[in-house]
Length: 436
Image 1 (spheres, helix red, strand yellow):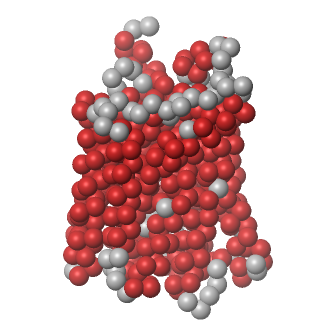
Image 2: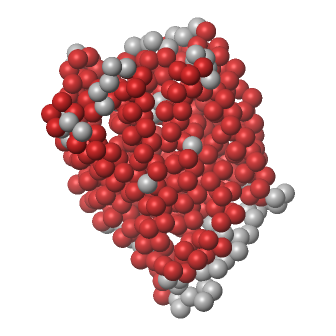
Image 3: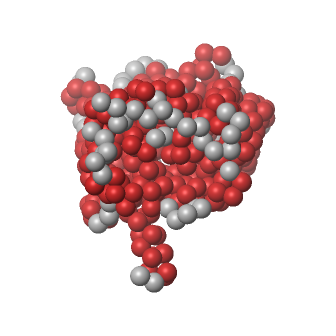
């Protein structure tokens, strides 16, 4: 095979595996972006705050299913293969999205309406529990030597394409539909669009090839059984916990600058919906630029320096810049703040995701990665919109979310020190997969 043909095959492999990750993030973002309308449709209350909190808690409920999905589906992928597992997660995600898109409102069927929406979110969360891990591991295993950080960065890069797509769709809907129509039924359109994308992504993923790394281990006598994978996961709980803390900074900052930004701009800063969505669009573009750049940089200078530098930058800057923003809110100021946070997030995450694939033992690479990522998202990141909304309401301090970001940054800094323990290479982990 010529070098040009090999490069083309590699590009298409990245596109195939990342396409489903796009759909997963697309569905999550749509829910976050239209939380206010969803709250009114399914959680009637005399308080706008109560409706918004109910919607954001439902948004967060999906993340509570991620650890379960990480163990169940991660074990399936580590035993049966990357391709089979990623096709399964795609189907589950599509089912959850369709459920939410077609759910009748509270005014139509009463209490069954929010129950249906919660079920849809739980199915989405169960699927998402292993999607990020499955995609990251697949990319790390097909990466060319010396370029693993660059390859794996496209897992997060596909998420940014989803951010951009949803923001563009949101701006378009806001220009053609009056606010009352958008609140009443227009919010369903993005969910239905997501369902229409599923057949294309399924065709792309069905043509995926199993990674050579996994195929070789599958042929070996030492290939672990599901029980051995779970046993190895328990044996390596300390590193999984360290991985969870590594991910906390990524997931908190990510959901703050994407899923929460439209609500923060509209409800807290009192900017227009279009202004907030335009800022979100710019954030997606910024993330998409910086992620592969910093992933490639981590291949050159190492993961640890980037993780330490950018966790410190978030810690020292988060609260001051949000305090400045809420004192003089405007489109330009919101854009400046979000682009700065985007730069920090993408620079940290460009190194963090590949670092996480490197500190997990190969025999439970998907399961371990997914559990660490899912725990961080379930406990911290997924509830960032809800936590931010509650803190602002409880304290009256509109910049209080900066403290939440500082906490996430501290987690990232401490976890980096624990993961590397003064070494340039990832800390070795106990491997128990082959134990009887």
